[in-house]
Amino acid sequence: METWFGWTHHRGRGPDESLLGEHPEGARVVDLGCGHGLQAAHLAAAHRWRVTGVDESTAAVTQARTRWHRIPGLEFVQAEVVDYLTGDGPPVDAVYSRFGAAWFVDPQTLLPAVAARLRPGGRLVISHVAPGFREFEIPRWDLPPDAWRELLEGTGFGGVSTESVPCPSDCHYAPCPGILIVCAQRSSPS
Image 1 (cartoon, one colour):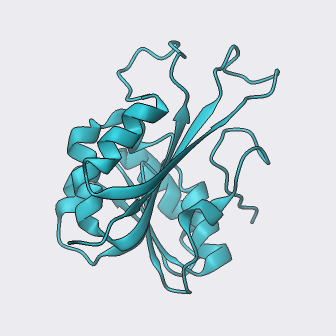
Image 2 (cartoon, rainbow, N blue to C red):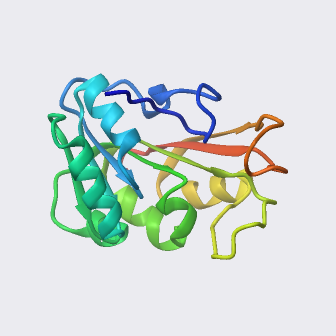
Image 3 (tube, one colour):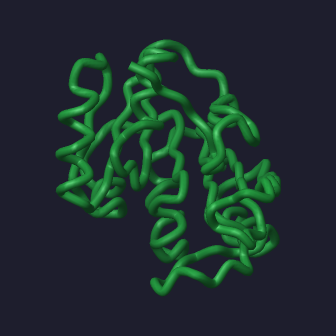
């Protein structure tokens, strides 16, 4: 079974999962908008983290469960991500969205829910196609770095950093403005 992790849609391009931080075996990680579960499966298998993939699509969650059911510590939940984050459940060590919910859910609603579920010091990492790509017809929150920084800092996150990873010339989204990766850490309560 081959698994891999990447913040871009090009294998081997950009940083790896170390952006999620150093966590011991058993750390709790949530994938917001997990799709078919490839990224979540990699994290559970490679790091022995307890990873929960959340997606609204029943078909995607069914496929993820079928494909990755043998990996210990991995579960998939069919739910709207804000409902999942605000529901009952333990605090988590890291949350990420790779072309997922953070790209499609209003950050004014999503970020407070993430902040409430993350442990102090927990990491949030988001990746999406950089602003300026208008091929998709559905609304997206492909915000520029400064807008993400302002929203995150206003929601209890610090240590915000951004990175733009250029796409190769043969990108299937060509012309693609690249991939924006946003990292932040949940601040400790005052």
